[in-house]
Length: 430
Image 1: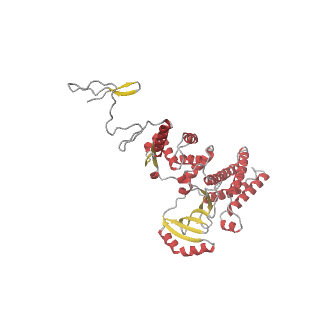
Image 2: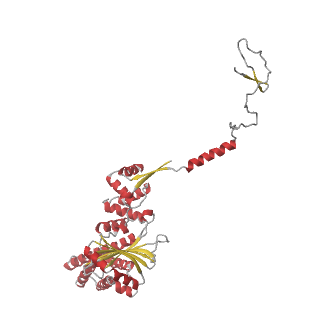
Image 3: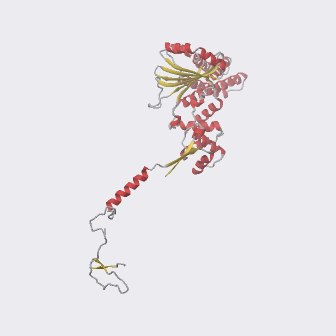
């Protein structure tokens, strides 16, 4: 049996049942339709049947907002993997740079030294390296110059590259300059025929003054007791003045007629000027390396001030390399003497090569000795108690003393680099 519904004047009315055969009932168009058991009247709700009205516009908007929040709350899929050469090549292609060996090496150094891989940084580095050897030392110097905000100084780039390549020691440079200045004084004394008396007097006075300053530098302890400190700026200023005077006299002398006295004097002036320039560059590089970098990778946040000081305890000219950690949480990144780290490296006949790392926190010390010699390791261990007493006399408590058998590489503190094995490429999928 089937019911067919037709609409009449807004009402649905049954047109059946329609049967076939002898049992068929006559057609009754207005007969009320009987609802089956359990049928739902308007406004009623059956316990086992949920009746849902059509959602309103406001309800749809609320639902849509909830779905968006749910999607936003889902964490993005992040994939971290070891950085590969393919990733470096991909970055170079991204910036339209040829991925040759030189550019790949430069890109790797930028990452290791904490410099952002950006088109702007690449352009600055290419500009600095143009016309240079472009070797590893030059690339490293260019990146350092960029980090220090000196990318517009080709002189700083050349000085840094020479420093990294040759690692000149201040003590040897000072000794060499003293020797050439002594030879120059002898040449001046015998060159009265080619120099005026006023020039001779002026040169002799400035050389004697510079000789006095340099000769006093090894006596760091005596200067400290007098309240004086080693002044890189003072020495640099005197060196520049001396070199300028020597170069001026040398240029005047070059125009005079040739003679044996003139040639001897010119050669001595050239040697003195060259040694003075070498020392000037060394002092400038120390100042550049001490300069806090601008944008620093969080993994390379430690920065140090750097000095080279003549070691007065050594018979032969030896240099003390001194690094003191800066406070990166304060303006201009000064040194905080109450919380810092001191790195010291030197060499003596008795102890050989010795590196010391000292962490300072208020009046507490943690000291680490680095030496490649087993004999010196035993010597330091035997004198630990004496060292603690000496530190206590200076109002410092020594918490720990370590002795490690290895070379101390000052460069890892002065020019820190990330570990290549720690570099990861991180991709985030949305």
